[in-house]
Figure: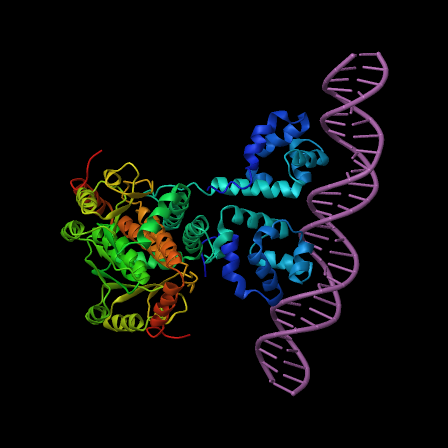
Length: 286
Length: 286
DNA sequence: ATAAATTCTGTAATTTTATTACAAAAATGA
DNA sequence: TCATTTTTGTAATAAAATTACAGAATTTAT
């Protein structure tokens, strides 16, 4: 799932460095030492730095499988971009707005990309199937996951199936106890360690409901879950670092909703268009 | 307009496309349509495809802040490598789970990165200052922005300042009318065209509150707003494509909260530690 | 509406950059 | 050692990008 469509040029160069000829190796060494600089150099400039002739640089590029020097620079640039773009730092007390806003944006964006790599598509498929065939769907969340549950309802209510969210532990227990076969309950809990949520999952399963969880793979909650959609976001305990898990959960729920919509087929999609239209009256037109 | 550097060429191009001259725009359209192809084209080839002269392509590159065509290609290549080029990929009815889940993950991640490029830090700073000095903070949202408002409360209640959210239009009107100087009201509305929200903003401002909006720059809501935190997410009308604006709003609110926490200083940070500790009793230990 | 000013855009010349052809220099192997 | 292969650099060539400038299109002011 990771987009390694083209093998990393830097990695390739590191591999093949020792099988290069003497002069080409000189070029390789320079490239590995200062890849960021090399992408801005002309073939003449690089040749001079490496103390070789220009055609040697050109041959060096071909040896690495590039069509020529411009192609080499391009691949090198991409290789660097993918490598450095994924360093997300933690917000420090002394950070200026410019810095910490950039860090938070980056961390958020990367949490989602990371989830894309980790998600188990089989489980997603099972979850979509279960929701598609369910009589009703409930979303349970506490604390930061409460708004996520609400957002899920806002998305899923369009599907025709009755949906609701429970963000109160007593309501959750009662609803879980009265659930029955054909009901799907989705538990949202990043840690998967919140006692009342875990107990609820147990109750729901005993009552016959299908339990889906957005949680950590090895958590107590996962034990009482039929379909775990595991996310391994680092629960950062730093007070400055925001919970990126919410964003991941929202995105996973987006995908589930999309999957169910596609399964429901044309009729429901017409209904969605109606819902959209119903909103136009509430807005200023252009 | 944007005081922070735009690291992402594709995002920048999408932003500035409409302010380009006729011929340069032709080039921009081709680049956005087929960015992967463009990185392999010579200036002459691209000029021919776009049906313009070579110098026009060169000027196009400079307009975007590049030093010339080679620099443009390099930046484009890096932009693509980080995944940004796939912003416009829309979920199609025939997509398999693998495909559309990847598209949704990508689109979500990119939306946040794009916002990072577009956000106006001066306005963020003003918003943080206003919230820091406020007597109370209210978050207003309807529909999909309701859960966002709830999430904001969950984050901001830790700061000591009284916070609440309003997701009911009548409550919103009443609360807005009784607001006073020193109160901050944050309106969350991607379109900025929801009539009742716009009216509320007007009421709130007349009542003397400081109005902050997470909305589109040129929207009616922006007119009645003191501090606009504009986000230009494409409101995709496709039924399959999820609202990425929520994710962006949540992230911006994360940054605001972090900014206020940092302003509040040490005492509040101790309190945050207490809040964190208070949760430990609710969880299974490791 | 018309003329002036400004902004765009393309042609052609120039400069920069990359590639090729080929010969000299190493290196290899008997 | 000498023939053969591989490696490397010089010089010529080709390709690509940039500049200067002038004509076109657009805007602005009268």
